[in-house]
Amino acid sequence: MTHSTSPLHKAMGNPNMPTLRGFSDLEVGMTDTFTKTLTDEDVRAFATASGDCNPLHLDDDFASTTRFEKRITHGILTAGLISATFAGTLPGPGWPYVNQLLKFRAPVYIGDTVTARVEVTELLPERKFAVFHTICSVDDKVVLEGEATLMAPEIS
View 1 (tube, rainbow, N blue to C red):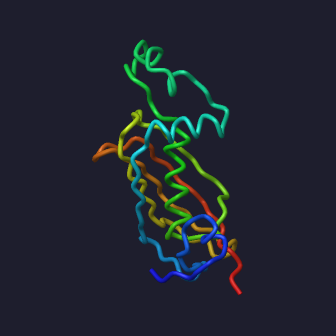
View 2: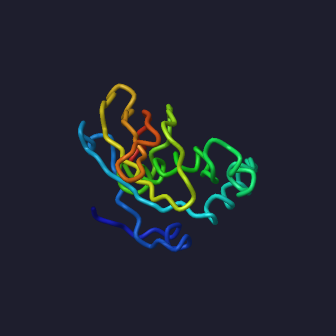
């Protein structure tokens, strides 16, 4: 993947922004992944940003009394790794979400390493939409599965 330098990415500490991809750059079957270990810091920052302060995510004592037996990450925090995959390289920056369907299959615990995988499954040229199959997994266990539709940016 080639990169271009962007003032925004420099300001965010990432001077190498992936090259913008247009609709015609995608093909059915293209895939990409993003992997991240979700930490206590990530969960607490997400709780602060979202206002979701469910003790299942934040309180060890409370979580120990639940079916999960320990704290779990927010499901939407896990789903955010799908968005990171999209913004990173496939399809890349500038593609806004149109739709995202999610099915949560298993909990993600603090300290789990999650891999988000996206695959182009359909291209809709009349609207310049791309449809993706989305999966998040821990080790080889699927924890989240779904489908996303994104809209191609206008590239001049």
